[in-house]
Length: 169
Image 1: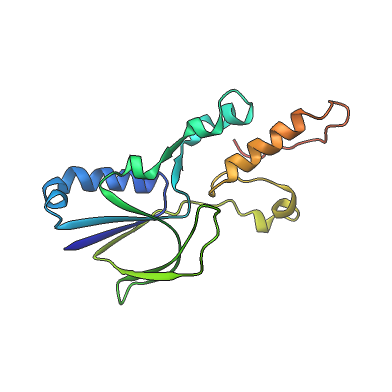
Image 2 (image 1 turned 45 degrees about the vertical axis):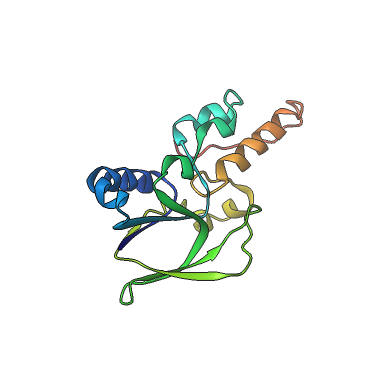
């Protein structure tokens, strides 16, 4: 059996999965090919409605699709990848539980094909103060954390509300 491992839960993984299923449908059905998704976030966030979520117009959970629903022919593993060894063709990962913490157990998968789609990250550490006082949008839970903070600020009277800066578009 061939194993395809997709690392990440974003758009790259969704598009790679869709292409694999279209191209290998019969082989997947016969169990000649296994697709495994290793993801730190069990749901895919659609970023197209980030503004509506932050404005309180749309609930955050309406922008999320569980990866088990989006990738029904894949084995979806809630995990953080800790090592990729291209010579041995292995990926090592640490399991993550429902609280976002791992139980400490690690596992290793051998892959025939590997797609790494972990996305880009804002360089928050390069801007003094941003890591401590700013919010980013691309990592697991980032949009929800920012939406919660914006909702908290809405509850403060306008005269007591701190200033905010939006960088990027």
